[in-house]
Length: 138
Image (cartoon, rainbow, N blue to C red; front, side, top):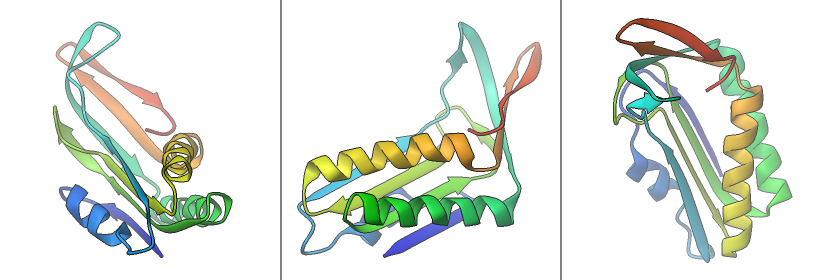
């Protein structure tokens, strides 16, 4: 019912989608975060993600378990990447399935918002003229 992964390699959106598909799910929603080329009007060269891996996986599991119950989900996949990512690469994929679309949309939003607030993954933005740790989470 839950697939949580913290990877150093390219994420597969299709793998997340395939995991959550079930015959009794009327709605599947995915969120795919991508590295954009600018922030606050400043050109981004790349992003670096670091994590306290055991705790990050544990926290992602807690979020997924809470979402399963709160939104009556069928299945959920949360994959996050660590390491250096170029523009256009994918640092996070979330996929959820539920009997109805509203629950799936609400659950997906809950998961990404909570992940950003609570999971110990740190993001550094690298610019041509410097770098900055953006926040304690992605």
